[in-house]
Length: 117
Image 1 (cartoon, one colour):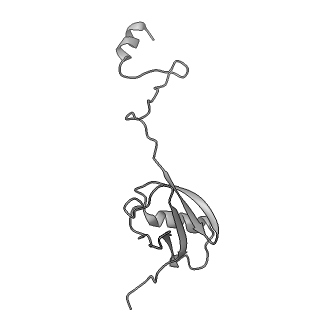
Image 2 (cartoon, helix red, strand yellow; image 1 turned 60 degrees about the horizontal axis):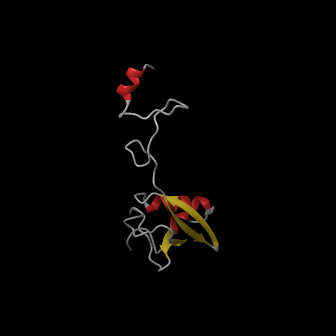
Image 3 (cartoon, one colour; image 1 turned 90 degrees about the vertical axis):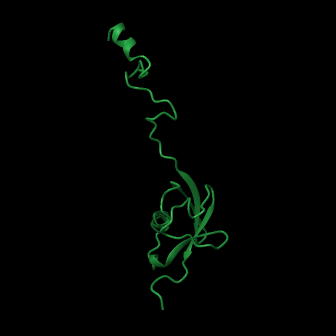
């Protein structure tokens, strides 16, 4: 590459001398890292740490927990609860449900689910 063509590129893209590929600075427009927080989920005395996105649905985290703990018996009756015994709504995002990074969640039988009596 000539010195003239290099000067026209300056200011737009920083080239890496090793690979001649653009270097992405942290926080730039090209930074595509997805932020993931973690919670600990406990079930029958076993704990597992799971990464989640704050905008991820509670149902997705619940499904992961059911698979990770190998819950085969009535998985549709299970729910995620806070330490304060509040059940997280399945259709809500983790952030909207009030889940904080590092929080402990409990996987257990849910309140009665299904149709109205």
